[in-house]
Length: 269
Image (cartoon, rainbow, N blue to C red; front, side, top):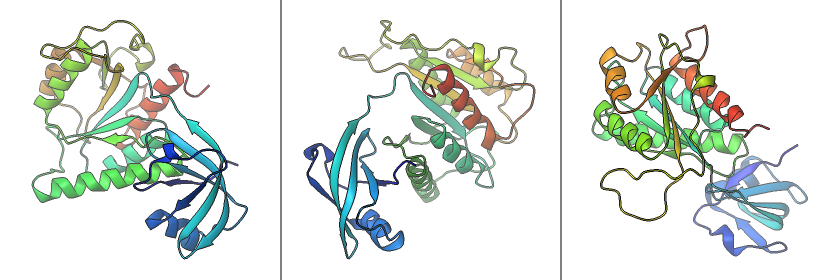
């Protein structure tokens, strides 16, 4: 059985090697030592959310401070390509259900999208509060899935902003798939980004190392993606794709698509 995962808070895990002692404190330390009652001899992993993992064994617990003897240090390579879920805002917490399950199936980043038919609207103070809730949801799901990397939650985008991002991703050698029930191309047939191929930098981009190619999956709200939005996104370089013969809820489509793509990318091998 894999060890439970806890997130380091404000600590640089790169300073710890095999044989050293890491002290898990703060909210995570209290959760491990007080709530879950982790004790001496138990396996625990501590991750930094950016790919670094300390594997260790609890030596002692003192008032919410868990002392962990490091038995292994694992540094994961950054994901290539980056798999990003653009999830339209949806009512009834269906959007949160989508990003939770997508995190468990291996998404690398999520983008909230204020789609034309989104009933939920992020505006003013609600926007910051709602985005913080998404961050907490993704963080908890990453721990549940024993992941060393916590997916990034981007700022919410409008359709115009999303079209601009699609244009940038396509121009840099990435791929954008818009899930649509009327599409004729199956998602399994959508070309994947060519990893390692030289990409043409978007206009106005500064010279330097090229970022990892991105694979964007766009999921609409309960009412679907409007024709105008499909036109705007495909004009920017996206392709439409379907998952299969059945129409899925907005909370289901994204996680299923992420799972299919990660299987194609060999990440589930």
